[in-house]
Image: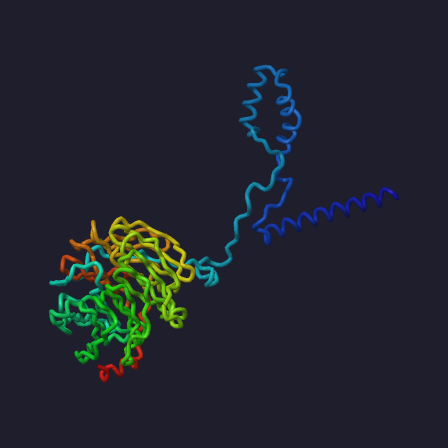
Length: 454
């Protein structure tokens, strides 16, 4: 091959090499803004030669270098930035990004940062206080309930009063005779117009609040006072001091349809789950039972699904979680002071928090993942917890005696509390719901025959 051919071949290789380098530079400047590409132009060849020859010899044979030369070498290294350890180098800095379009409103909607939710203000004082004379100071009773029609019922001694939250008007529903009183429990039916009233003599009365008249009396189930009530559509569940739990079908004359036996002492807490499938009961025997209708309906003995024995004091406070159907919160009395969380499918205790004081009542927020607890000795406070971290968000004080009863407004924002200091307080604890949903009207059919049954 002659010299001309060699020169031609060398030129072609050089052109192709420069062409390739030019393409890489072009591509890196336009397309590969997120990568570093090795480039010899970024290398300091003098520094590399120094490190590979004189610098290496100085490190390997320090004895042959005079002190004066060593001092000179250090000064030179500092001046020329030779105290580096790397020889190979890449580009010093990546190219600055080219902003072709202004930043605002350029990102897809699903990539845009969500606006930070403002921190909710929780008032530290009650927004209203009402007198509640003759309120029975008894931990085991349930004397306060807020119905779906926005009317609060409270039992004071032998009398049941109704407070209409829409216009702040108060009316008297009924005063019970001394022989059968006092009133030991109240609970609104789902329709918000019919109310059940438990009595000290073991009877339960059903009233129509709109017509202000008694519809019927349920007898023969209990042998002592009825301190707890819970509706499940047309089934009214009652819990007595005798330890029995009775399901009453209010549509029929022979109203007792099931009896649950598991508690050895007074049943002071009853709550049906939102699905109406499971019932939680708490008693003065420190026990919590979970009853399942699919299990108990076919069993005459009505065996419980779970028997929860972790509390060490009476359990009155029960609250089903609104956003997780199988999550139940329970609170123990003065000897226990704990809030416990349960998986009611498995019966497992998920968490236990020592609150430091008697837990009288529990309420879940319908808006946020929060839980409100009402306490007795020693601070008589309301505590708002963030779930599931159980970090305290607020502690609200104002009552001078233990907060015995607590009820939540239909919209989920306000909470009413009644305490042994004979006052009724209203708290704006849970804020304002983002979307106000109309309260669904309950089917009035279960109560259509009550007027004819005696």
